[in-house]
Image (tube, rainbow, N blue to C red; front, side, top):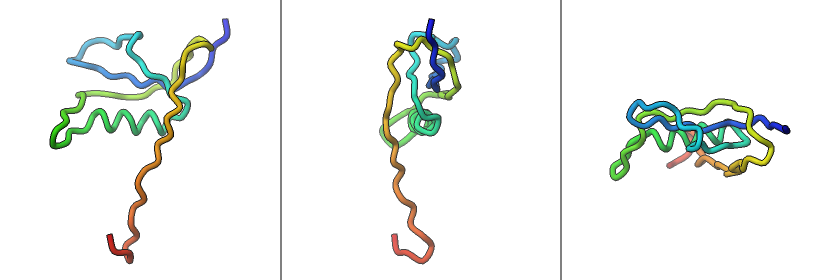
Length: 82
Protein backbone atom coordinates (compact mmCIF):
# COMPACT_ATOMS: atom_id res chain seq x y z
CA UNK A 1 0.00 0.00 0.00
CA UNK A 2 1.42 3.37 -1.05
CA UNK A 3 0.87 6.26 1.34
CA UNK A 4 1.45 9.98 1.08
CA UNK A 5 1.69 12.67 3.74
CA UNK A 6 -0.90 15.45 3.43
CA UNK A 7 -2.42 18.18 5.61
CA UNK A 8 -5.98 17.38 6.70
CA UNK A 9 -8.58 20.07 7.36
CA UNK A 10 -10.81 18.90 10.20
CA UNK A 11 -14.05 20.64 11.17
CA UNK A 12 -15.64 19.79 14.51
CA UNK A 13 -19.38 20.48 14.68
CA UNK A 14 -21.24 20.61 18.02
CA UNK A 15 -18.34 19.01 19.87
CA UNK A 16 -18.79 15.72 18.01
CA UNK A 17 -15.93 13.40 17.16
CA UNK A 18 -13.93 13.83 13.97
CA UNK A 19 -15.60 12.16 10.98
CA UNK A 20 -12.90 10.58 8.77
CA UNK A 21 -15.16 10.79 5.71
CA UNK A 22 -15.53 14.58 6.00
CA UNK A 23 -11.95 15.75 5.71
CA UNK A 24 -10.36 17.85 3.02
CA UNK A 25 -6.70 17.27 2.22
CA UNK A 26 -4.18 19.93 1.20
CA UNK A 27 -0.62 19.89 -0.07
CA UNK A 28 0.38 23.09 1.70
CA UNK A 29 -0.19 23.64 5.46
CA UNK A 30 -0.54 27.40 4.95
CA UNK A 31 -3.45 26.92 2.55
CA UNK A 32 -5.19 24.61 5.01
CA UNK A 33 -4.69 27.09 7.86
CA UNK A 34 -6.17 29.90 5.75
CA UNK A 35 -9.30 27.88 4.94
CA UNK A 36 -9.68 26.83 8.61
CA UNK A 37 -9.46 30.48 9.71
CA UNK A 38 -11.96 31.62 7.10
CA UNK A 39 -14.45 28.90 8.09
CA UNK A 40 -14.05 29.65 11.81
CA UNK A 41 -14.43 33.43 11.85
CA UNK A 42 -17.80 35.10 11.89
CA UNK A 43 -18.76 37.92 9.57
CA UNK A 44 -21.87 40.01 9.09
CA UNK A 45 -23.84 37.37 7.13
CA UNK A 46 -21.79 34.25 7.90
CA UNK A 47 -21.65 32.26 11.11
CA UNK A 48 -18.51 30.15 11.06
CA UNK A 49 -17.82 26.76 12.59
CA UNK A 50 -16.86 26.66 16.24
CA UNK A 51 -13.66 24.71 15.67
CA UNK A 52 -11.61 23.93 12.56
CA UNK A 53 -7.97 22.88 12.53
CA UNK A 54 -5.30 21.26 10.37
CA UNK A 55 -2.99 18.34 11.07
CA UNK A 56 -0.67 16.09 9.05
CA UNK A 57 -2.00 12.65 8.13
CA UNK A 58 -0.93 9.65 6.09
CA UNK A 59 -3.49 8.73 3.41
CA UNK A 60 -3.70 6.33 0.50
CA UNK A 61 -1.77 7.53 -2.56
CA UNK A 62 -5.01 7.67 -4.60
CA UNK A 63 -6.74 10.09 -2.19
CA UNK A 64 -7.57 13.40 -3.92
CA UNK A 65 -5.69 16.42 -2.58
CA UNK A 66 -6.90 20.02 -2.92
CA UNK A 67 -4.40 22.29 -4.59
CA UNK A 68 -6.02 25.65 -3.88
CA UNK A 69 -3.71 28.62 -4.27
CA UNK A 70 -4.27 31.15 -1.52
CA UNK A 71 -2.97 34.62 -2.33
CA UNK A 72 -3.50 36.98 0.61
CA UNK A 73 -4.23 40.63 -0.11
CA UNK A 74 -1.14 42.85 0.20
CA UNK A 75 -0.99 44.95 3.34
CA UNK A 76 -0.28 48.65 2.73
CA UNK A 77 2.91 50.00 4.21
CA UNK A 78 2.81 52.69 6.88
CA UNK A 79 3.84 55.50 4.51
CA UNK A 80 1.39 54.38 1.82
CA UNK A 81 -2.20 55.61 1.60
CA UNK A 82 -4.79 52.79 1.90
